[in-house]
Image 1 (cartoon, helix red, strand yellow):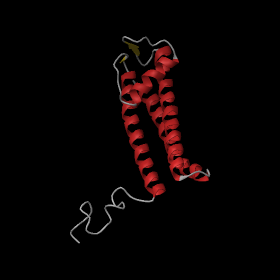
Image 2 (image 1 turned 135 degrees about the vertical axis):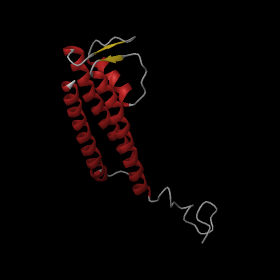
Image 3 (image 1 turned 180 degrees about the horizontal axis):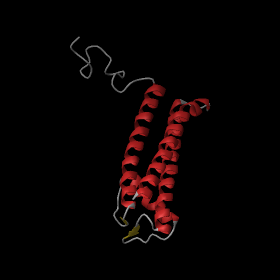
Image 4 (image 1 turned 45 degrees about the vertical axis):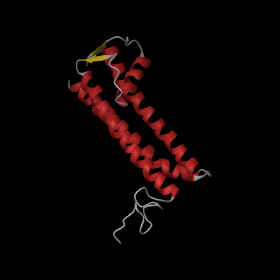
Length: 161
């Protein structure tokens, strides 16, 4: 179990650093592109998704280790786990918390699978909040104090003034 714990913590650390660096550098990279704010948001979404895919492939590496070295558990189920791309499939399903249930982890690798679902949830939420802030900044208004809500006397705004 110690090997599983250390491997999982290493993978989490790598994924968090990748995600932080991707989002941190995304803003300045997109600003350097000479494209409209709308296009900048689209490019930002695509690059953020690419960061998620890299993280999914890293977790798949942990599953591949479990598959071929067997010291931290294994897998059973309807779908056979035979190669790295089967591990990538499991990682996509787990990271996105979709969870088809056609592959069942056993042993210590269950810890890694559970943690990946939690990491995926946090990273996806982190990306969503980042992209929301970018859209507010690039589109020039806030969802809370947008053009409709800021008008005095508006039924949607604060009409107590």
